Amino acid sequence: MSFICKKCSHNECYNEKSGRKRCKECQRVLMRKTYQTDAYRTKNRLRHRLKRRYCTNEQYEKMLIDQDGKCKICDLKFDKNLRVDHCHNSKKVRGLLCDKCNCGLGFFKDSKVLLMKAIEYLN
Image (cartoon, rainbow, N blue to C red; front, side):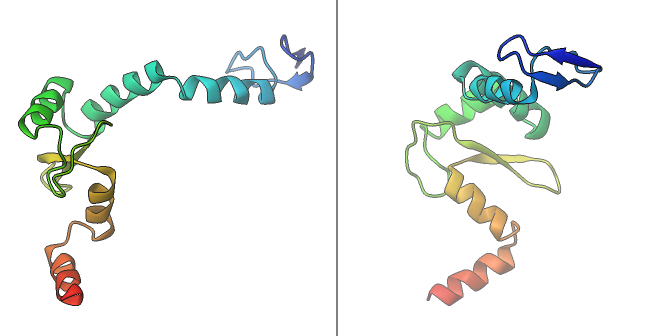
């Protein structure tokens, strides 16, 4: 079934399940604007923490205060939100890390052996 986009008057076939009233390009533009808003990011950041990182917003705020807003590894203070680090096996939350430290652990697959080899290499 074909409809006319209410914004740009472009003819477009729509997925009947989605119920969109815009063409694909107008929908992309709208979603880009939506994803970039602070309200959207904050709402989804809180939901993501609870669902995927085993941490409620209250627990996050307490850890942030305990760590004085600093990364637990590099000890630098950040204005942006720190990431919730957790053990992938036990699902236990270990602390809050900056993006670089969190990615670093991820690149080394949370392996103490690989990290020790990296330390030996640097020496």
